[in-house]
Amino acid sequence: MSERLVSIKGLTKRFGDNEVLRGVDLDVDEGEVVCVIGPSGSGKSTLLRCVNLLETPTEGTVEAAGHDMCSPDADLDAARREIGMVFQHFNLFSHLSILDNVTIAQRRVLGRSRAEAEAEARRCLDEVGVEGKERARPSQLSGGQQQRVAIARALAMGPKLMLFDEPTSALDPELVGDVLSVMKRLAGEGMTMIVVTHEMGFAREVADRVVFIDGGVIVEQGPPAEVLTNPKTERAQSFLRRVLHPAD
Image (cartoon, rainbow, N blue to C red; front, side, top):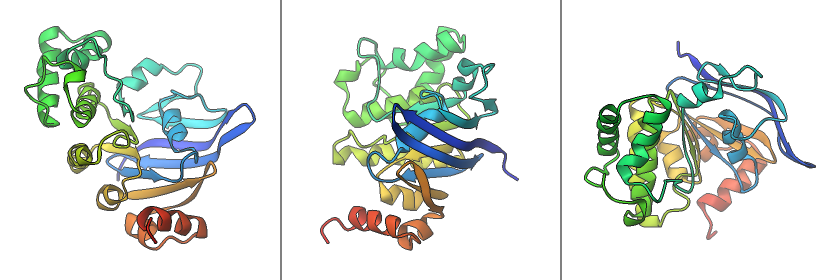
């Protein structure tokens, strides 16, 4: 039986009078790939950011990778070492080389020697297909390459859980496939992943479960073939009709 890696209960998040999440419950098991879909402004990214406490929940609880993230005694640094996150915009350090981008957290947070960190960085860069670019600066790489470096940076920390916040939405269309192929390989290797995405083909092919969020609540969830092909709710039907058949 798989270990539960994420447990979210009654998650509410308000920004002033704006209630972005309204009592969300969500569990994710070890090795599971969960794709979160929904319209812009539905709370998808906020949900993801609450998992590693980049956003602090207004109400509710979040347990992730064995850590009670909402506890006053939570060691967030220790928790975040086990939760990798890849953002929409790559968030690489522009003044550092690719190798330094992937080693800096290993050395400062994990305490690895330069040699250890560089060996792991090279392994991860090779895994995502950006070998040979170690001395380049981010500006010398394509957007797709930069995003794969961001994935390598997260993997180099040895996370139990990977969070992806619309990782392909800032890329030119021809670069999307390279990033998705890396994510597919990670999923195939058993990495636990929560992916906020608008790539329905990826969700259909890779996800174990698709979660449809609208208005800060989970409207529907289930296997991709069920949610994407035969959604039960009118709201999900309407959203997927527009996304999958925009010209209709």
